[in-house]
Length: 365
Image (tube, rainbow, N blue to C red; front, side):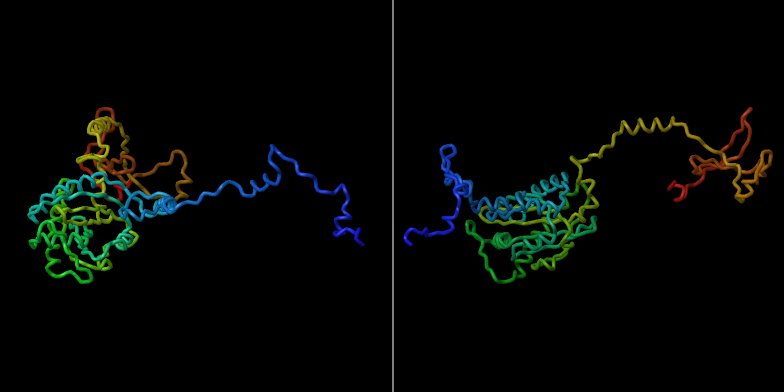
């Protein structure tokens, strides 16, 4: 009994089916090579900054800027931004005008700077407004639409502090959790009216536009001037008064700028979009020397089709016209002139007596 094998199956296994012995490959035992293949290369774990960069998030920068990563792919289909070169020139001029007018308005050293001009959905902008803030809805009279002017709380308290004689070198006091008082709203309204006058002067070289303040709101839902999906131009401005200041934002929907869109597409003031006076004069000269075919219509009749099909050579068609009847001159089927037929030498001629006034139907031909 002691000589019996402990594993009967192992004892019955023939020698030909025994597992082969391990053979080293390039000096590495097969067991170690198999372990290396199973483990693969060392995995690298992305840190949080690399993940944010891949997704296009940047929590340290709240300004709208060119996105990257997955967010760039998502946002690429949201807003189709059409670059308006002349609009940038208009707002550069607005910055210079605001610097002078706000200095006169506050009797303080005011510096106005243009942060950026971007395109955004109107609904996304309303959701991104930091509250509390004052939103001014204004109307562009000649353009027949509205715009939105947003003043943040820092600028509101700074303007109130400056206009009411606050001390220099002390930051404006912010009191959260209360609505703006009548005095604060009135002072901010005066500042917005000054800026709207500057906007009218900035647009004056391009097109005359008057901006009229409609109302002031503190709730973004009551300042809806366009549909949430509509695209708009967002202009961010920074107003600094020594150690005080804040941000203000100007929103103009594309529908507001549509009447002057062609003017805003210009690269420089007075651009004519490809019009060439030399080519126009050359075209006019060639048109005067162009030969056209004019048909003199003696008479028109409506006849049955079977009568026309049964006509034979030698038949006579009687015209409802006499030698004194007026005939009509047409060019390309369009009636132009009326006159009387006569003879000039050996040729048949037509003496023009009147011009035919073109109707809407003839203009469409």
